[in-house]
Length: 196
Ligand SMILES: Cc1cc2nc3c(=O)[nH]c(=O)nc-3n(C[C@H](O)[C@H](O)[C@H](O)COP(=O)(O)O)c2cc1C
Image (cartoon, rainbow, N blue to C red; front, side, top):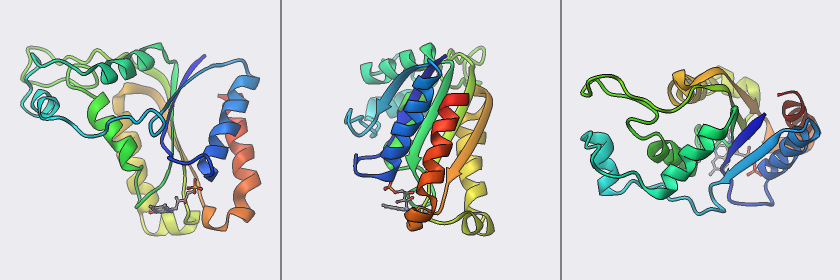
């Protein structure tokens, strides 16, 4: 399969980077092709320009889609599955990844609008989408506070939405006590890649 990983962490010293390495090792062990958008390394622009907003918000599709956004569309079109990998920051993905959704999910590509004669959304339906994130808090806390559910709703119901045939979210939690969870989380990341 062709795997597209959208990765958002600024530092190679991070645990999330170790998760990325294990995930890729697992994917490669099963012979999958892997393409990565390493958003910080690419210095991916996450701010919408005025023109981009006017294309989205005011539905002015005569305005062009920027080249860096089209490049992401092409990666999506080649993919059989997409994995979003990031650390949980303030109960959501880093702004870098949020900005990827803001810009890459352009109107007419990722969603249509009733203003147009027909709902147009050219993005192909992807077989599988996985949201894989690391979180400092343990599972119990994330569940009891409702934070796990709110993250699932935002990522799976809204952002992955109908664009993915099958989708799931795995939270590698409890990283504030990394020694206790590290090996198991890295094993899980490898297995995800191997068995995807
Ligand atoms: C700015 C910032 C905000 C964070 N917010 C949360 C949070 O809201 N919930 C949580 O469980 N962990 C939070 N964490 C902890 C990260 O999720 C944790 O650092 C990550 O799982 C693994 O660390 P890494 O940066 O080494 O990859 C936060 C960390 C940072 C740096």
